[in-house]
Image (cartoon, rainbow, N blue to C red):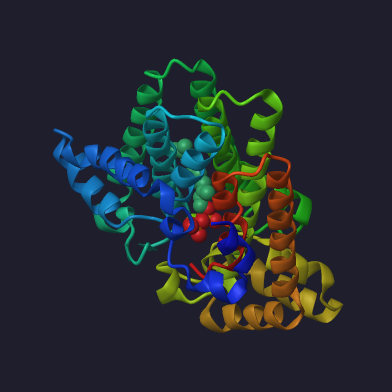
Length: 340
Ligand code: FPP
Ligand code: MG
């Protein structure tokens, strides 16, 4: 594993198809997480089982479960509660995406119709609520009260972040600082919680638990900044979701923030005029995209993501060397170089 870490560079990372290839020694655990997630498909409630089958058969990247498992093992954990906890963080993530796709008017997720497009918003809201409350109820079986607290705290943070993001839609005064606060709450908080919960299961001392939580935060920041970059520069087919959707919905993310603050006065007022209309047709979208692409905003956004990924690697270096630390140290580059 050590050699793999040393040898990896950007071109090689791109060839790594998924999380499982970053962490080969946790395959069985990831399979066990899938089995727990599959329990929803056996629900006596027909609607829950039907939509859960649709949702969980088209698996996401499972980054959060892999992080939780690796962090617990890095701290010497050898029980099986990490499987349940991993399925809980993945279920919170899934529930949040159900709601997010309604809020963002997104019709595609993971290359298939989003749940609200297929079943409508009412059923989707209720299913999200159902998955979410099941998570909290299952977490109560743990003897770790602190973990239950973390799961509820992270849920309110995610909701707060999503609320704030929606509230400042079309607000062209938001700056990088506001943006980073929002993505920390809505996205990085769950990465952080996943790593911290792994540490708690492994009885990590406070300092180690904090390093793991901070590692997760920085990884999550990298993840969301790249997500927002891909909205401007990615390929719709590869990503399995639409591009330019942030712009279309008035979400002012880092590429646009940079453009508004660093482009010439003439371009800035032109973009402001286009955005003020709030209904962006194809030619307005293309015009804004062209300006964002031509002023270094995409490069700046990538560099910002890279800063967080570098810091997350530095944090890991504060922990004693192990195969699990080696596996975790592959995540920052995997997330930074991803194209979906
Ligand atoms: C995706 O962001 C959304 C999130 C990371 C968080 C969404 C949170 C909520 C809807 C609050 C509800 C939370 C719970 C616990 C039920 P994005 O739109 O930038 O990503 P995308 O491009 O993948 O849609
Ligand atoms: Mg969204």
